Image (cartoon, rainbow, N blue to C red):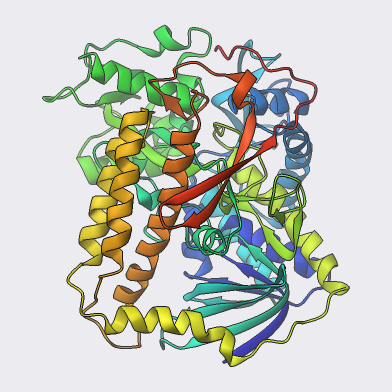
Length: 577
């Protein structure tokens, strides 16, 4: 079956919906192709807030927000992206408010704001109230609000469609192929402009806050086709995952006054970030937690985690401002945050790297910023180089509305002057062959077994702390897993709702993005932001103040090119808190 739309967006999370909405407002015929129903997208899991220098609680300025973002990114952040972001996110939050988003309010009626990690006033002197929030369900509210607006603008949705191919010919994006879950039928989508907003790939790790669907499908598809992935070595672990499950407990809990304690009851962040303590950026806090455990000061019978202490906060703060995480603790661990500290440890959370783009979401294919006509990316799937080596909390929700809006506007304007490209049934061929190969295979390897081995080995060798020896070991493991992947078979040979087939396809994507991440981490011989090499513990601006572009040249073989970091008003300097 064939479909035709001027702008097609892949993904119905916050970035996809923002993109689709603004493209439609520009007058384009817009469709969204999504693995899920939009309101079930992973943006709904974002809890604590969206950062914007509104200054509703205390003095704040977009320049301070820009500085915090650049410093938080360990100076790998492109400063033109940070400036655009810090300015435009203010307007974006006000626009969300006008769309009807139910932000929490101050007594004077203005949007309430809370503190968050790495957000400071007066160039780092103290934490600042910058995160606009709706209890601890901010992402959920953004998702609902944007979806309602998309419905209002008559955007077409193809829900539970899994994209299996992006058609790139003669250097131009021409369309998509997608598998309809309900029927098993392959669909051909013809478009003048395509926007990839399909989210991250946290499912490469065993312990993660990410939904089951975040498997890096589109990053892997473009990577296979010879396009680069940027800064893949920078993968963020959120400090407070509910131990041992990894379910996210928002940083907003520390913004409201929560304290991290080790097994001795010490507020250990005083040792690592004496100025802002528990509100240090995520990479700093995550490493500190691991170090406390490694040095024997962990909590619990095995001394293998630390504790998030909220017991000193007024019960009404916990119940009203943090209702979701309170419920998670009670349901999953039987721990009541009002009465006892909650066990936590870092959980794989967010990809700073991804599909490289310009400030308007155009996908680039090389270090000269050569654009792929008709192809765009936004949100966590993309890398506009806003987050650098470490994303600040709340900047992901800001990223998706600011750069989703920009991608949507540019894609719609591009489509007005572009023509459709001819597509035929032959374009379904590669996807059909891949699916039939999996369905007809008599191999002995099982998807669940390989996925579990991948996730555990990535935790062991390529998570918070890394060494060349561990990463090289993971390179060899990935080669073996990719070889075994060629011999997978599935039991379900049917067409309708074949989720076993989908999981088999997703495993292939997970292996591809893992390959890009591990090779990039092995290649970067320094420590910066979320990339902590114990064999190269220092940041090395002389050799590594640059972006990595990873290209797949063959299975297990990756080539690198480099792009300079866009500097500006803030010179790189030592990063202390």
